[in-house]
Amino acid sequence: MNRSPKKIILGILLALMLGLVYAGATHHWFGQGGSAVAVSQNTKGERKPVYWYDAMNPQHHYNQPGKAPDGMDLVPQYAEQTASPADQVPNAQAKTAANMSTMSSKDAAVGDRKVLYWYDPMHPAYKSDKPGKAPDCGMTLVPKYAEDQSMAKMPMGTVTIPPEKQVLAGVRTAVVERKSLVRDIRTSAQIVADETRIAHIHVKVAGFIDKVFVDFVGQLVKKGQPLFTLYSPDLVSTQEEYLIAKRGNATLGNAPFQEIAQGSQSLLQSARQRLKLWDISDAQIKDLDETGKVSKDLTFYSPITGFVTDRKVFSQTSVTPDTELYTVSDLSTVWADADIYEYEVPFVHLGQRVTLTLSYYPGKTYTGTISYIYPTVDPQTRTIKARIQIPNPGFVLKPQMFADAQLHVDYGTKIIVPQEAVLNSGTEQHVFVVHDGSMFEPRKVSIGPVVDGNAVILSGLKAGETIVVSGNFLIDSESGLKTAMGGMAH
Image (cartoon, rainbow, N blue to C red; front, side, top):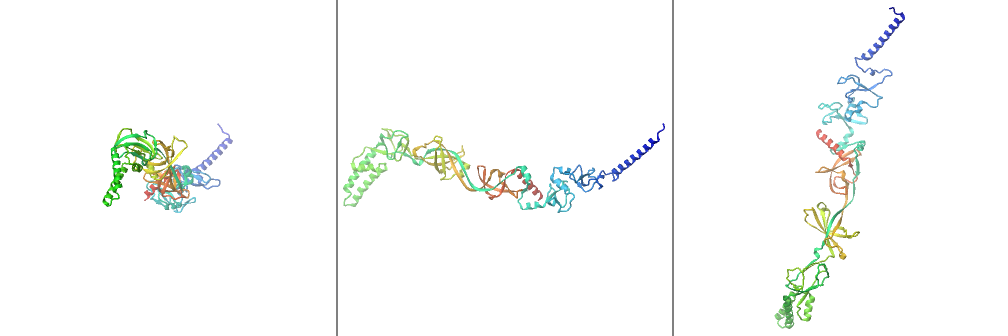
């Protein structure tokens, strides 16, 4: 079949055009020794790369195109691109070291930060004057910046945390204050009789009870009020001896012989002293002197004003000196035994004022002072009793009543910090002191009592310093890691 000359000419022209296009593509792809980076040619209208990087290891940067150690072609990074794959590297220290790969001077800088040297983060003792890889573990070297030199003067464990990271960690700070500190100790107490105001009534001579004037428990008696009468043969004979000695002294007291006169006076004084030793009052002896008659029954009187709390006196019964006839308690002043936990005892002292309230008398308060602190601990409750002496006008407070006691403890002016600011390891306590807003120094402190969420600082801090009160556990972890790495460097 014959073809048209026109079609033959069109075929030849098409073949020539395809050949020219193929030749240009071949030169485009293989003209540079097989490299796929022909875009690197600085021709008019083409983009100029800032550097080349390994697609499998974006932190590795190069100044010229070529092959990566793993055999892959290097990828260009252009100036107009805002973020490179290397910027997505999760390890910030590796990224920084990668960005420093084109700098070999020891005084190279990243931005405004001056690099002093590079070191192996796993082995900080290894230092290099240029970036690269650690010879032992192959990790990327980390830059040491000039501003880190200021940390050299700080104690070991001091860390620097940028403000933006402090916000993420929830770091809060507070200023150390010196102010007055008070607290209240609240406990229970029981009202008891004042043991120094209790009278136990006995007779000092055997006899028989004749009349009883105070005949029930709970009766209020006044000092000098008659209690009972006693018949005692010994008392009767002693009264008779006294009257005989008195008559003898009246006859022989003025005798010309001194020995006789002194003897009569001595006999009279002995009889009188015996009556007094048997609790015969001066008034009764005076009555005996005036009447000259012996009293069969002698009356005994209450030695104090108080309430009868025990009675063993009944008419027509015999008594001996060892019989306790009455117990009389003066309740014008009472005691309250308060239970103080053993850890609170150091804050309780003699003379300390105590306020008491009783459920029986709502709205009323009673005030007393601590007069004694008992020397033993109750093994069941682990408390120590403190005795509170309380005036009791009107006898409102009665023995065996329960009361709520409140002790006001004044510690004076102390340096205090929030309790949450103190990290307690069991053997020591420390806080983090803030310097320049971003430098955190671990400071060992000695703490005293903790009151209402505030700890008293005995040593280690000064008023006006700024400390961390929240987020200090994260800072402590960072500090511990840095201390451990510092120990590895040495």
